[in-house]
Image (cartoon, rainbow, N blue to C red):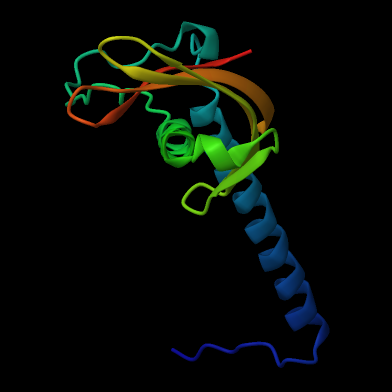
Length: 156
């Protein structure tokens, strides 16, 4: 048996090519339509979708918020206020800066008071940092052992 194929330039070849192209396009449309039908399932609604509660995962307790920048700045101010020589300080403002946090400010008022058990210094200072400028009022006291502790440091 001898099979004859049409030559590539003939009318028969072009007609067969058009028929084959039409069949391919038609079958491609049917396949795509069938796939889309599977996506549009009846009864599916995003509003009715709920998370899977059966999955169990580990959890970590939330971290406690620590104002490390603020406490470092408080320590810097306490150290400056406690180290000042009151006889030479006078009424001039005392600038401070903390390279660890990038904050800076000016101590504008210091008052010293002494009782039988401790020496305290009350002060006012500004604090300029990336989160803004604030004014603070604080108090640091020297305990019997010579250690200075910060008793208060709060916004004004």
